[in-house]
Length: 233
Image 1: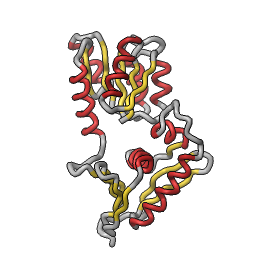
Image 2: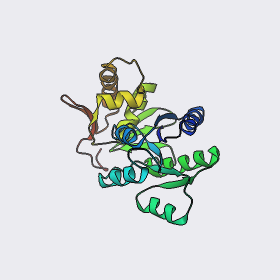
Image 3: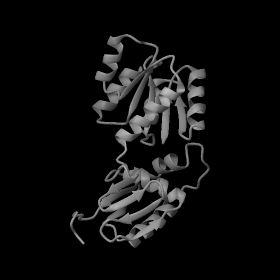
């Protein structure tokens, strides 16, 4: 999971990044609201920890702007404010959770896990599905629930396909995929995405699943369902 922390207090921001990284998450930070909003718009984050009192654009303005755009990225508001009015205002503005400073890291981790379960379309069997294509998040296998054929993915193939399945029918640019899978500071070659997409296409074809990765000229790729009907064989 890729998490963005928008927090102007340097010590807290860096402590959160370290703690989340140690917990196994990918975490990055932004020191003000303007920078944070730009990063959110890249589409590479799964969850945002958002302070209310920020320079340039405050957290509630960011939240309101995102929800007006119909951007439903999970957001945990982080603030020193602890009155009932502030909490209600934050939740009414579209926040998914609210954490008051100071707080214990274990509580933050628990809230992140809760939001991850709520927003990620994963069954109790750890399966992500798009059309008849299924991705097992534990074994890294993809299969078609029509043909029964399955094949295992490599780590980067898995990360790319998981990202695309969470964004089925949405065009993802090469930059978005690169930053999501390799990170902002990666020295990955620009054509790495194309290479792994080629591998994925072959493996999806092997399963016989009725989905495809469509190229969008000059932009990137999207995962599409192909005339899928649940009872088709």
